[in-house]
Image (cartoon, rainbow, N blue to C red; front, side):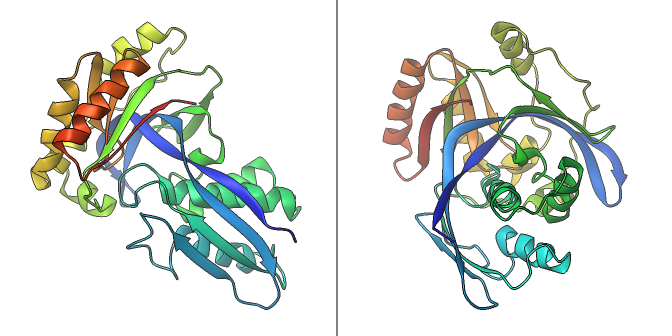
Length: 285
C-alpha cells in the first residue's frame, strides 16, 4: 500500500445549548457546527506485521496518549468487528490543531481515518454503520464524517447537514489551556432549552441569530480559567468583530468578523498582547 496523506479539519461550535436533563450519564445538547480550513495531516501506510505504529508530530503532539487516542481506538474497534484482518498500519499525525482546545482535532482524526479505510480498504460500510462505529469512538466523530455545516438536534439525536456555505471570517485563538471536557460538563451549572433547527439561508440573518446565542459551557470555563474571559473580551473589542465565545468545552476562543482584513488586523493586535497564544485567521468551509 502506498503512503497516503489526508486532511483532518478543525471543528467550530458557533453555538452550544446544554440541557439540564441527563440521559445515560450525558447532557443532551443542540449545537451549530462549522468547519474551517485548518487541519491536521494524517500520513497512512500499510505495513507488515500485526501491530500498528502510531506517531504524533508537530507543535501539539504533547499530552496525546499513544495507546488510547481516537485513532488507536478506531483501529481496535474495526479489528474487533473483523473489518481489518491481518492488516497493520503506520500512521503519522501532524498535529496542527491544538489538543484539548475544543476544536475537535481528535474526533476529526478518527472520522478522517474511518472514511479513508472504508474507501481504500473497501470495508463496504453503509452510512448507517459508519455512523454507529464513529459514535462508539466519540460523540463528535459522526459529525466530523462530513466537513459540512451541521446542526445537531439533541432532542432527537439528529445530525442535520446544511449544504449552504456560511463563508464566515473567523479568528481562532488558543490560550494554551487544556480543558477536560468531562470536567467542564461535570462542573457546569448553566443550562438552556435545546434549540430547533435554525434558518441559515442568509448570512446576515445567521450572524444576527448567532450574536444572540451563546455557549452554555462558557461561564464554567471562565470560572476555572479566567484567562479565557480576558481573551474573549479582547477579541470582542476589536473593530469588525460580531461576537466572540469559546468553541466546544474550550479553551479555544473564536471571533466572527465582518471581513478578512479586520480579522487579520485583530490577529496582529492579539499577537502583540498575547505573544505566546496560538492564533489563526481562516474562513469557514
